[in-house]
Length: 74
Image (cartoon, rainbow, N blue to C red):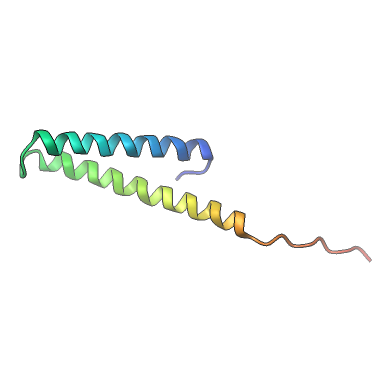
């Protein structure tokens, strides 16, 4: 799970790298060739998208939480 902004950036870099790798595989290998490799890369890309979405959703939730005033002491 992605828990910090640094991990988030690393995951985005990994995602870009995987997408570039998949593009190269698709260009250099015809349909049906190296299918398992492409499928594995697609699966890693999907996993990263899910983790990024969870992290970004939690960050958005933290930012949109209304601040509660502290209770006054009696």
